[in-house]
Length: 111
Image 1 (cartoon, rainbow, N blue to C red):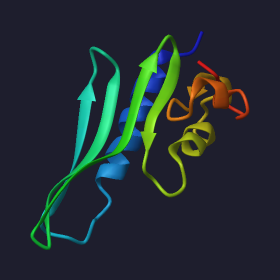
Image 2 (image 1 turned 180 degrees about the vertical axis):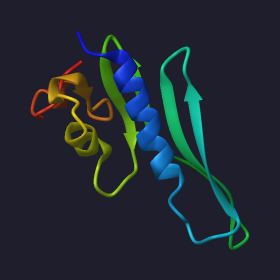
Image 3 (image 1 turned 90 degrees about the vertical axis):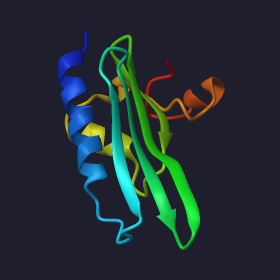
């Protein structure tokens, strides 16, 4: 069984790191949303840029049944590889943004 407490700390640490990236736009803020009771974690961009409203989810991860479910990954490199590099086995990472059928063709968990 996976160490869910380790996964919680790791996900919060990684998402906090992403939220600290400078967007070089004073009208935009990056927020972390941590629902620790339900194990749901997000990074969102919020604000105004060039008179346009900006609101968007950059990362959304859930922890369910001992696995990290990547619901949305809007990063360039992919957070799954960062999780693996920090000690999470691939069989404990679900690429939930892929259909259940397509997941079987990845190196990661199917569900």
